[in-house]
Length: 473
Length: 72
Image (tube, rainbow over all chains, first blue to last red; front, top):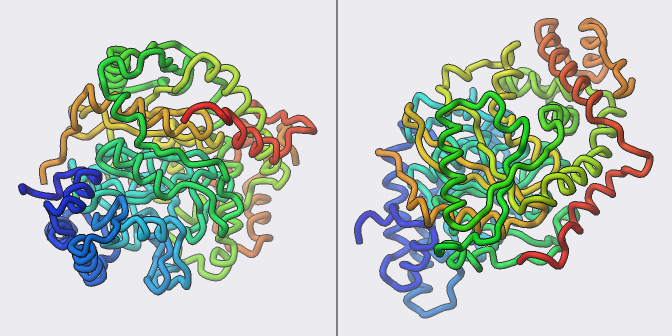
């Protein structure tokens, strides 16, 4: 077999199950790449090579013994360093938790373990998931595999870079304002932010309990569909996790990928805000992606949306008070241990009146109802860019905690944050490269709990457009 | 304070408010916070008009029950 790291997650799982590839060889191949590329990309905060190799040997023994295998048996994954595993340091990308060792394991990790996945390390991230660029003062900036001078997007920076660089076959991230979709878009991989409540948050670092979603990044839509199928669903440890049944998200993907697979589907293009001031190159790629979906049978319609620019700003009235609440003790006692940017953003939360926070939370019902009525009565899926501009350089976004911070960071999350506020699922799918050589992505947004539909549209696009390019590393 | 537009407070008062929560803050840190709060307040003026019965529970109910029985 040629380089096994070039397989998709589902291909790798199948090769192991069929005995064509050993888990040990696959883990070794990934760890070799980590060793070679970590100095360039800085994706990992820690690598758990010894544990991974031991699990791989056990996985191969299970295959040889003919034991029942999980859907991820022997497949190397790595995750944003905010998912607790009992007995392993979990830094949350911070100085404050540099030595934090949790005493319990996140439900999502336990479910991936049960499916046979092998975790090879803990990935870089923005400090406490508080930034959308990939900067991190404590562990160093994570660099984009397409061009290390450019940002990876964040806050799941290591997840985007590691999956794009084929250091792991998939990665968990979290998305409170775009933190899965942004690095997926900037690094040229697929990323899904599920509906609020679709995935348990037990044993994961909190940021904003009204907005936090656990998502994942992988190199194909089908890979993300498999990962979500495995980790979604009710959890006795998390009262906020939805009890809605979890479909097999892989079901229907092959049919959707056939010619005409999107017949009858209505793709909605928001009639305001999301395409405002869009870069012409990005606009062309987005228009091309719509045409691809039309060729697969979808019908494109313009749909009305409310003032989502204001919605974007309003989400700060929820995010930062909740984050400031979580961090209040450390803000009082260890202010010097925060990076300037994270601290500056947390301070916003201390200035939001409690009544305004409460009003913003209560307004969500009406604002969601409005979008469902106005836009989703006319379409099945919204289609818009993740980013409106080509992926910027690190220098262009190195704004620290100063006056330019809100504007620069606000532009990056402009098209992602409104859907966290509303709780809707969003899928980021790569659609091409801009002249600077960096990827761009379309964002598909669905009604609550319609991740299945997003995956089908994404799979149809992938089938028509072909596999997305890989960075030369 | 309410979302009706009387949220604007001076930077000195904002620094005092933050300090009252036990968090030390410098004057140079206050200006960006004040800017962010102004944007939030402007958004609130446009969007915030929840009725008495628009509860947080209503949001989660809507999210949870939308399309039940349809789809997958």
